[in-house]
Length: 350
Image (cartoon, rainbow, N blue to C red):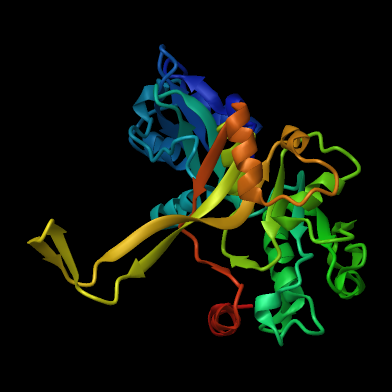
């Protein structure tokens, strides 16, 4: 868990410890909390400086048992809870530390507010597919690649990159083809943004996955892939962490799409009418255009072969590799048509 403090083990004390040992621990570990565990290793509770001071006011002394000041039943979270949700819980409960506890009640980590609000730098690469012609977006894309179309004063591609940067990503590869020189002229090597940007130059359109076959230096860790025309509030870090926890070879972010039938539906059996449903609402999961992949997934691609992501996932699944879905609750928009672009202009806050 990349957003979990790795110093938490030093903050563990047994329930048999004394108040004095807790004071010493708070001073030495300096994370403002002591994690108290039972003889069986389960979390018994927490102790803060305030808990100790209130105990001293009640007449306890430094030699008193730690159990006398323990705050039982503290707020805890499971290992797979997304960072954003943890932060909301901390704000709602006005706390700055939250223990991470597994299904057996044992402490496996500790969230600290300061670390959650300071993105941890990630060495993983984000690959952005930005080589398509955007034919359906004509005439907007006649002289501008679709990912460079402005939304609230910035190219869509810049919105994508800056959002990934906010989660600690600093290494990017951009796949370019149609009017790719305009993308290179804007971003160059990324140094003006404080990041590193390289380019995958497609000689012809290779689909939403094919450009990955042109990556020269093999990755040695999982990486992200996103379409260059997908505007989303997705937490790229949470997607990567989910992929790693699931031990998957490929993870696809999926969104929920709702469609309401414009007419009342008549249900029949033969010629018999057996029921009615007035303008039913249908829900389905759809590909959100954002993925996490392990490097071995690239073995299923041939150089310069046209391949879309669903086909790559199907190849991996058929081979027996683990492919999983990452359910998204965040807003997202695939800017594929002029009407989508108009929606992006209205809804997207820069």
